[in-house]
Image: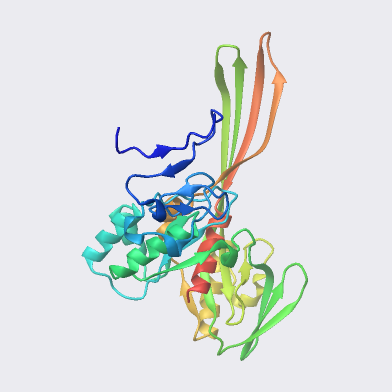
Amino acid sequence: MGDEPKIAADGPHESNEIPTMTDDPRFRSDEMLECPTCSRTNPPNRAACLYCGNDLEIDELLPDAIKLNLQQPEPWEDGFTIAYLGRDEIATEVTARAAEILHLEMDKLNLITRSNTSGPVAFLRSLSEAHIVATRLTEIGFPCAITGDDLLTPRTPPSRLRGIEFGETVATLLDFNTSSRFEFAGTDQLLLVTGVIRKTRSETTAKRSKRSMKVTDTAESLNDETVLDIYPPSDVFGFRVRPSGFDFSCLGDRMQRTGAENMQILTEEILNRFLAAKLIDTYRSLQLVLDEIWPVGESDRSSSVSRASFGSVRVHRVSITDNATQFNRFSRLQRHLL
């Protein structure tokens, strides 16, 4: 076809290599961009290099012509979260236009905008693309901000606590591993973020022959643990209360038998003592949209192969999924956008 990009004819290419583009009839030759990483030529309507995937120079792009693919990072990569700032009511037409830009269902975006808290609306691999998306959202009146994983450090959880000592005007947090003590005044503006860490373990046993594989046994277990993250004014990494290993004797006569009950009472106790504290408890209600924007990964923890009957083998696989990284992102996002 006459409108197809011209391809450089500078010798044979490997079958798995993308041919290098030297011209594009939609743009002048002086508009084409050279990738700062691999030095190959790209049309100016791309936010990331066609060949190596790295960001192009954003100042040289044609923002209105950019075609966005909203590519998410791989599970092991850091990314950039575009977050709704959650401070003002947004008109329906603005939310609808934002949903189009984000390629997100209107109902899911409404979960974020109506939660009265900051929440993610996109998670992108390219910083250049994140800037363009955020600019387009801002132009239509949708308040947002970009936060990178280098700031949120989602793979590092907050410091675990083993107890809290309440005084008349202060509270002391006790570190689980080091027994270090951190004291805060009752007038400090603490941020409390509640959520749940959910771990699912799946075991599958299958019999494999030359012609087929048949599953012979499956088992699945689910473990939910309610957590409470506490962020003092001067701390961006925070502290975490987990029911297991925490001394709830600080609750006195209010202490109950189950960890879930004690977590609720502890949260109320902190709010009563720190009058300027703010509680964010929307994580569970946003789970549907969070799973789409920050997908929960699955990892194979172990697998084994053993000989079965003649001509077949038995395959045993154990996989585990957990949302710890997802909740860490959500929790720290609240702290940084407070």
